[in-house]
Image 1 (cartoon, one colour):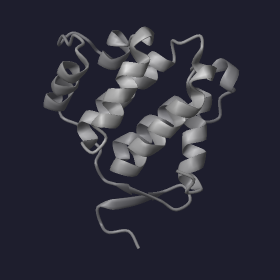
Image 2 (cartoon, one colour):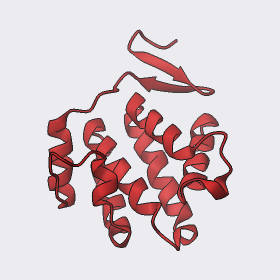
Image 3 (cartoon, one colour):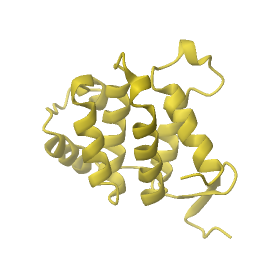
Amino acid sequence: MASHDELIVGVGAVVHDRTHPTRESMLRAAQVANVVHEDWMQDWPVEVSDPQRLDEFVGLLVANKAEWELTYWLLNLVLASASERDDLHERDELLVAALVAVWEATSACAIAQTFEYWASPGEDPDKSFAVTPCVREVQRRIRHGLG
């Protein structure tokens, strides 16, 4: 049974109520990823995403997966960068495995919400983000315990 600070999401996935990453964690993520952060940036991870640095960002994400707030920002940076890749299908399995590992390390509500956003539920994958099929596979594996 889930404790009072957990939510059940999907079938069998327990999510810890970690929903609001701090501004400080965003600044730290920018420093870790060596990307700029300016106060005027409304959607920071999208604004600084870089498809050419995707593998580097995935490495940083996995290396910092135990820190859910840092993971939240790096995850969004990874997904925004991945969504700009033309060759994403060649990286599918590595990306999916990394994202599932991040989930298993954090189980944070903010991470589940991020996956839900990028999965674009109810949308045709051809009309969604390039990374949508990968994120849907991540969700499927999480629901079925196939990490």
